[in-house]
Length: 73
Image (cartoon, rainbow, N blue to C red; front, side, top):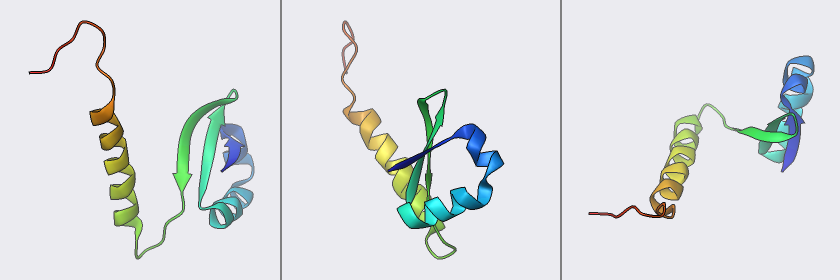
């Protein structure tokens, strides 16, 4: 996955769109640290693409290890 600094997003929007179209996803960084991910989509699949990303995040949250000293009911 390609990366782009958050400053470059504003400075070079056309390059960002080309990168996104070519790669399918771009990692956005700030001060070298991951800040977000941009995903390519289109008018036919945008809703499903958003749902897929949100469901993946929810699955990770459910599988997250429990903090020490906590218990599930």
